[in-house]
Length: 154
Image (cartoon, rainbow, N blue to C red):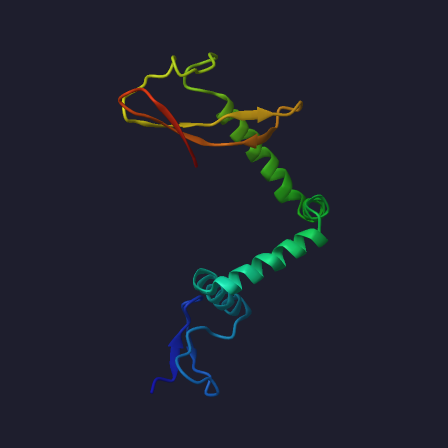
């Protein structure tokens, strides 16, 4: 019987815990135990509908007790560097998104080069007064040979 095992998370050889029955796959390091729990929970969520429902209910209850604006405001206050970095990255993403390949012209279905039976991704953008993107819905547009347009939700 081997006296060591290789931890699935940290990939280090560790001595086997003699009190542990069966094959030991994770060491006792807190980060490895978090990884073990996350892997177990992911597997359980995928295969146990009752557990999945109870977890979703618990998350909804937690969200109800901690409104988004309070939680996120507190997070931004405690992680000011991360929040500023995210703001800068979002501005870059917004700039990239606002530039379209057709220049300043708003693309319409007539302006796009349409090939029969191709799938196009249309992304409407709605901005608030400050120019920030408020909501973005993505639609897949399928054009078939008879030029009938069918919208599929993404």
